[in-house]
Amino acid sequence: MHTPAITGSGVFTPDEIITNAELVEAFNAYADRKNAANAEAIAAGEMAPMAHSSEQFIFKASGIERRHVMNKSGILDPSVMHPLLRQRDDDEPSLMAEMALDAAKKALAQAGKGPEDIDLVICAASNMERAYPAMAIEIQDLLGIKGFAFDMNVACSSATFGIQTAADMVRSGSIRAALVVNPEICSGHLEWRDRDCHFIFGDVATATVIERMEDAKGPFFEILSTRCATQFSNNIRNNNGFLRRSRPDGVADRRDMQFMQNGRKVFKEVVPMVSTHIAEHMGDAGLQGADLTRMWLHQANKSMNDLIGKKVMGRTPEPQEQPNILQEYANTSSAGSIIAFAQNSDDMAEGDLGLICSFGAGYSVGSVLLRRHG
Ligand code: COA
Image (tube, rainbow, N blue to C red; front, top):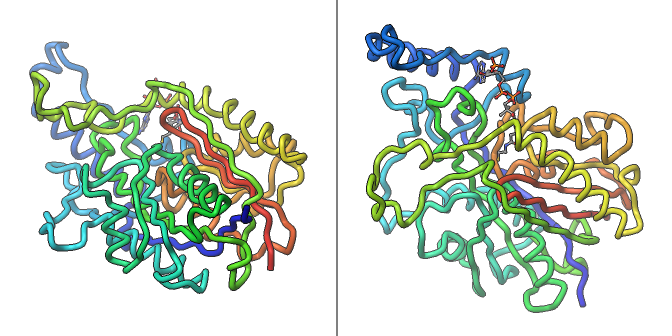
């Protein structure tokens, strides 16, 4: 058996940014247009008018200040309200692959490794650009990696589930090193016309290199243990799928073809689930929350993270102990906890303990317990 370690991480951040002010302006313009177009029905009481969104609400309810996206112009155009992405030829790299490639190269550079050192690529994300061939195999090809590759989807927990999968293979010896990539184009499945959730998501890609501890070339994080758990829930759901055209309303622009959630219920049910999960994971490792120097939590909502951090540590964590990045990136699904990790781990000292924890649709929760070396 070999000890697995995370030896590199990388983040691709799209150039285009949408602030809450820009988002709210576009949403309100859309709402005004829709209300004007339906003025008669609204006046007759047959239809409720759309209410305006507000910057104050968004920041207070979520902690989000802005988000990076792959296309801003379409999202902010009240007559479009979704990203406008160029149709790519089958012979060109696909968009998710291109985003993943940037993050992967950064992670490989940090680990001091080349394509020849990797023998598995996992593309773990909450949506795949196409059904097949696997995104991971395209990324493997573009990087010139031998071995094998496959896709995984566990929504917001895809990255941690991917890390566990890779770590277990490194431990058993079936692979020597893996690259786990998490390209998330959340703007593609967000309903930007829905006031309850239009502010939630952003786009990004992250990557981690997982390999044998003895192969590390620089400072690294030993993977002490991992834990994954799932429990079925309809409270976060997207009904888009390959049977779409076979239904009576076929490819109609139905609301449930985009991200849907019952946010209040998610908040209430997931906070205790995650807190208990982390406590049990740490307890079985002979540790407790107070032993952690750092917690890199899934980035969906600041209040959720504050509550989980307090429950796990038994006190209010200092901002550097539980770094949030959602003010800058919003919720980036599976990539959120990995951005927090990649951007807030270099300063840790030899022997410090940290925990990556993701949670979301499924429900799903995944945790990775790490010890810093070097
Ligand atoms: N602007 C202004 N007001 C808004 C608004 C907006 N964009 N969206 C909703 N509101 C209003 C509602 O109409 C409601 O008004 P009411 O009290 O008069 O009915 C009020 O604000 C509260 O709305 P609610 O949806 O209950 O807000 P919330 O405090 O639950 O916050 C979320 C919403 C989504 C931020 C929060 O529930 C959350 O983060 N949940 C967990 C999300 C999560 O982790 N999802 C995982 C996704 S992978």
